[in-house]
Amino acid sequence: MSAHSDNGSVFETRTFNLPVDNIDTDQIIPAQFLTTTTREGLGQYCFYGWRFNEDGSPKASSPLRKHDASSQRVLVAGSNFGCGSSREHAPWALLDFGFRAVISSRFADIFRSNALKNGLLPIMVDDAVVQYLLDHPYHAVRIDIANHTLSIEGYGDFDFPLEPFSAYCLTRGIDTLDFILENEAAIAAYEERGTPNS
Image (cartoon, rainbow, N blue to C red; front, side, top):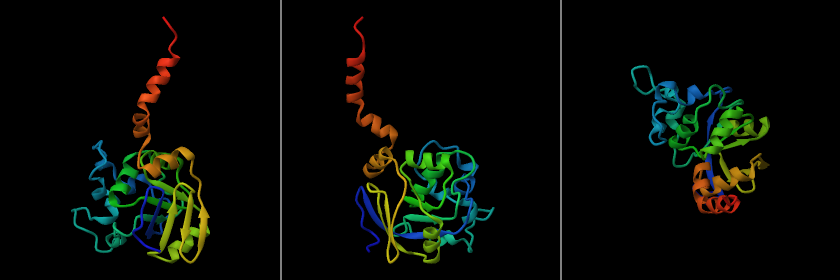
């Protein structure tokens, strides 16, 4: 299984493990970095407290130092990922850091909704599947978004929940606003047809 194959619906990559439960949005992107309203550049602050000391120097012991954004585009984490306060900056930071998807046995509902709206794929599978990946770091996986299937090399294929609209947007690399803009002409025509004569 290649680590670099990619198209709109299917991509193959390797995993990066953070075997920690209850990773909250403040750990993903600390509050002091929420002043920006743009997505670009937030990756440098992703998991900032885990990656840097108070003086800004890198933590030598941080596992995130070993993350290779070119080959490890799926984060495998413990249960209840994305808990805490609602902030769209969390999926923005994860995407800018190089992750395209997160695998966990449970996601906080608000984080999952924010992730899907912003192009980050939350893959929810059973505890046993997550544990296998945590026990096998840097593992090859294949993700088929359209068919909501996770294929793990040497282990099996697993379905994960994904709404059709979210799958449509993710396979095309668009968010909800992009979808509306794409269909602006059709929406305008519909509204015009539906306007009663004055």
